[in-house]
Length: 80
Image (tube, rainbow, N blue to C red; front, side):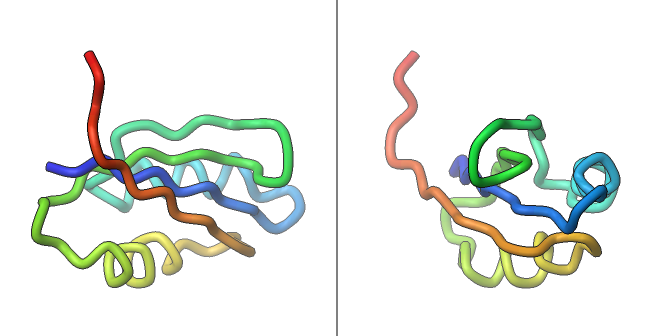
């Protein structure tokens, strides 16, 4: 499995609704954090190594109502 982080900018007043929808509707969601800065949320997803990340974000994440913009961070190695 590959970890993918997506920073999410929400429509005004929608951050909690978007966070709950990501957790409830996207089964690959591991965690969702509220954050400061340019984006409102940071979501962590685990997807299969052979999955198309662009399709996943476009079809699963962008389908959530209240999302205004995203930025995807692809991971390479997890250090433990």
